[in-house]
Image (cartoon, rainbow, N blue to C red; front, side, top):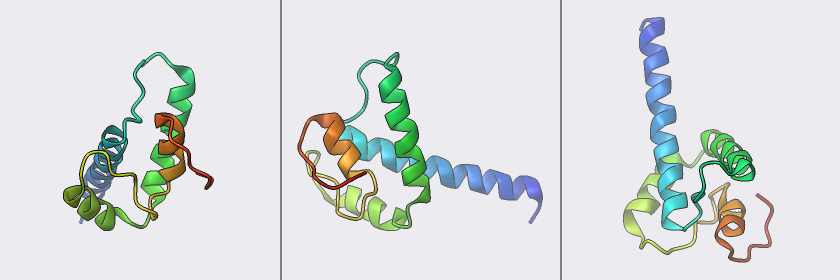
Length: 95
């Protein structure tokens, strides 16, 4: 497998993972409303890193396919606390 193919596969994998993150945030009302909000940019950057480093991509995909829109994120989600903070629900665990 060539370098370009490997790079393309990695970018596709990252894109797929970030699509899952976006859907998780969207379903929980945690996507920033104002694209100019600098604080939200920092939160979303941290969320992306947490999601890309998460070992539960397949579980996340399955969970998203089987739950309703307003279901809170699963316990395995590294962004669970961050989502709760951004959508105004209480969450005691750290992000």
